[in-house]
Length: 107
Image 1 (cartoon, rainbow, N blue to C red):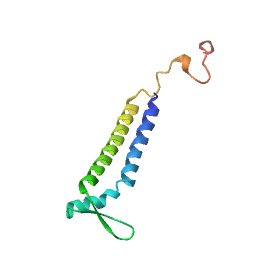
Image 2 (image 1 turned 45 degrees about the horizontal axis):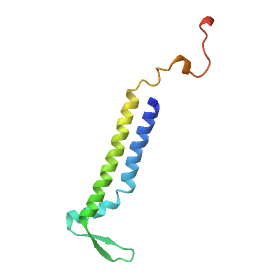
Image 3 (image 1 turned 180 degrees about the horizontal axis):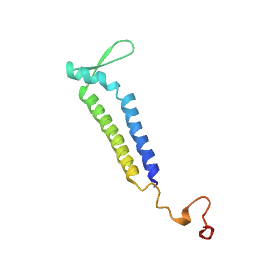
């Protein structure tokens, strides 16, 4: 795979990790505060009724989300480093080059 593609894929994975934690991660803030401050967690319906839920399950969900985000960002960093440290497509064989060919007899 091309070094430039590694760089682009790395940037995309890092961006996806931040988008994931920004959009989905915000719903776990409420449960984390409830668990730390009160020890009991409640889910509130649209009509205002409080339904008791298990805090441990919500904390497990938060940990799984955090692990997935770390995996995305970590994979993106690995691909980004691999792309930057690559040879940037400089080892192209002469028969694989695209474009006008320079004839050695012209010089």
